[in-house]
Length: 491
Image (cartoon, rainbow, N blue to C red; front, side, top):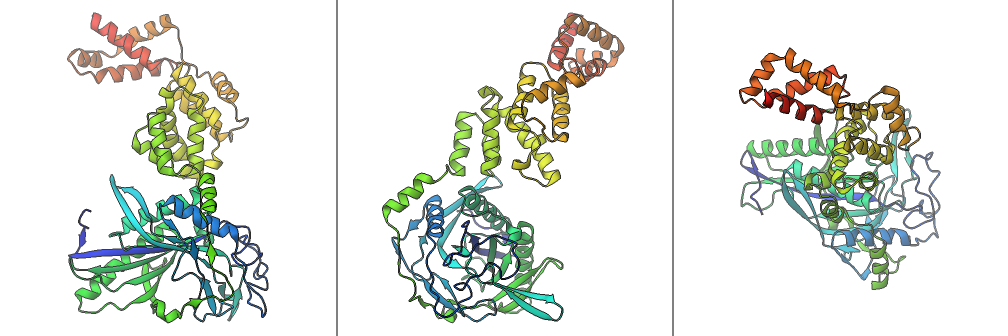
C-alpha cells in the first residue's frame, strides 16, 4: 500500500459512516409509506409514533436490500443477526431509543475499490447494519416555535461503516461517489442526496507518521459531494493548527456550515457504551438461509466493474471510456443501445459522442442521461451517416444540435435524414467539383503550398480547411486531403 501523503508533516486518517435510505415502499417496522415530500406527520402510523401496545414487524424487502449490498461487496451475510435498542433522548425519537443492530450486524466485512488519479484504491468495510431513521425537528416552522415531523421516523436505513482507510478528502470523495454509484446501480437506494437518501458522516483525525491514531471528530450529515470535500479539508486544517498551537483534540460531533465553509462542534462524541445497547425483546433474531441469498444473487444486475470489463472486451473500448460509461445503469444502457445499432468498429465513436457532446449538454442543463433530448437510435443514425460518408463531423454536430434543440422529436432515425435534407448538409461526392475547388485553393494559397513542399505536413490541414470553406462544409475532408496531397506531390 502506498505511503499516505503528508500535510504539514501530518498523516490524515478518515473513516466513513454512510446512512443509505433503502428503496422500499413502506417503513422498516411498519406499513406506513416512505414517499418524500408529504405534509408533516401524514406518513407516521401508530408504530412509528410509539403508541402504547404497538409492536414492530420486520420489512422483508429491507433485508433483501441488505443482502444485495453485501453480495455486491463480497461481504459475509450473517445467517443469524439480532436487533438492539440504541438508547438516547432527542425530541424526534418517539420511543426514546432507536432500533438498530449492534453485536451481530447483517452484513460483515467486504471492500469497495475505485480508481483515483490512475491508481486503484480499496476501502475495507467493517459492517453494514439495518436500522430505523428518526423523525425531524423543524425549527421556526411557526415563528418562535419548533415542531416535530415524524414522517421519516421508521424509514429503513442501511448504515455502512468503513475502516479508517482513507487519507485525503480526494480519497473520501472518490469512495463516497463509488458507494453512491453502487447502491443506486443495484437498486437499493434512489441516491437523492438533497432528500436525505444518502447521508455521510466522516470521522477525521490526524497524526504524526508512526504515531497511534489521533482523536477523531465526526462531521455529521454531509449531504452533497461538494460540501463533503470542503468540510473534510477544513477539518484537517483546523486539527493540524490546533495541535501545532499546543492544543489537544477532543472527540466531538461537528456540523459543517456551507455558508462559512467551516465545521463547528455540536456535542461531545458518544461511544457505544453511552447508548446502553441491549437486544430488542420485541423482535426475534433475523434468520437468512442460503436459498434466500442465492435468490437475491440471481436477481442482481451485472455490477459496474463487470460491465466495464465487458465493454472493453466486446466493444474494444479503452478503460477510461468503459469507466465513464458505467457511472449509472441508464448511461451504460444508453451506450449499449447506440452501439448495438452500429458495427463494432464504430463503438468508440459512440463513446466519443456520449462523453463529448452529450455529456456537455447534460452538464449544461443539469439533467441526467434519462432526460437526454436525442434518442439512442438518432445518435446511432448520425454516427452511421458519418461512417458512410454522408456527413462530415462539422455537419454531424449541426444535425445533433438541431435534434437536441427540437427535444428529440420522433425518436427515430428519420429525423436525422430529414435535417440533413432540410439543411443541405450531405457531403458532396462530385469528384469533378471537388477537383475544381482543390485547384482554386492551391492557386490562392501559395504560402501554405510552399510550407507543405518544404516538409511541413501540418500545412496540408490549412489547405483542407480552405477547401471546406469554399465548399461550404459539403466536401469530404478526407477525400479533399487525399486529393490535395496527390496534386501537390505531382507538381
